[in-house]
Image (tube, rainbow, N blue to C red; front, side, top):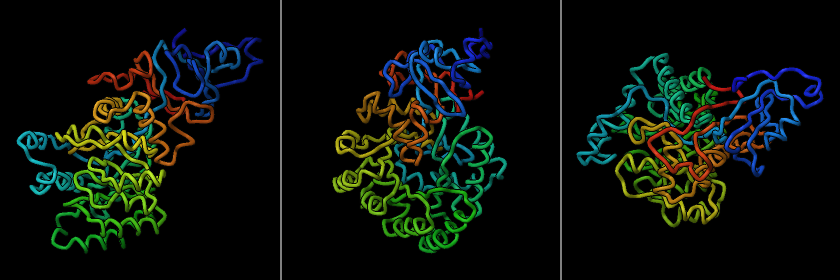
Length: 415
């Protein structure tokens, strides 16, 4: 019998409960059932997890999948990505080798402004094709759902185009997406002399239109020197909140001046980066226990920085968290959550279990999917990956290779 084959009808299996898919013979299924190595699945949901012998006796499966000793993990959820870019920025990698810093590259006309020019020049069809290619790369590394930001358009026309491209690419690839409008990524070059005018456009034109079109469920803002200050960030976030949009914030990446505290005050879903998190910011997050800390450990590696988010202090304080790639063309060009999990273990001193939580249920919860995704328990979406790993302790242990061998979304294998 092939590893995916229909089960023959017999008198014996007619009295069993029916399921669409039975996954068996894995190295283990990560979930709440101790020792589970099999899953029963129907209607895109997990029916049961347990021993293969037990589930075989209980269920009559239309189709079976032989796990062949691979480790079954929940499909990875990437809580912070920037996939709506048209071209890469590999030249900047050389500039960093010469000693230029992130904000110096931006001041040169590189960085985000470079990506903005490319997105504005691209047709919607071209941009959709690029985003779809990015999603497929992510899927090959086990990502089955993600948050996806715009932010390289910085005009109503081009932010709308970017968000439409994200949705169209999600439909084309089967990627589950929560779209975020990051029109407050940077002040575009045409408004550098009058940033306040762009802020008015953001709050009075871009956000209402994006909301009316139903293109985004949340917004994000980059609060940082050279981008948006605290006052502008507040204005943007409050305008979005009035429209019923969720709030996410780039905060404390290079400088700390109250962005985390602002995010907590406004009940933001997450604050991401946190490499220079202040004590007051940590205290605010600890008292909130609602706003997630978005940890992006591959970013300081890519940018050749020594600073890391204080993950151990955050976890000790009970702050909910997730781990994400920050996949983008300029400051972290990787779509691989398994690779990022390695940096979480090395740079953030997380255990394998902590890293795995960060790329599964932690990320899902930050995106409002905590009761649907990120676990392989009954009632959850049957999004799972089969990895060439002997056990959970090996997750993030190796690097430079992809452990993901097969990817399933809603119980269906991605080709």
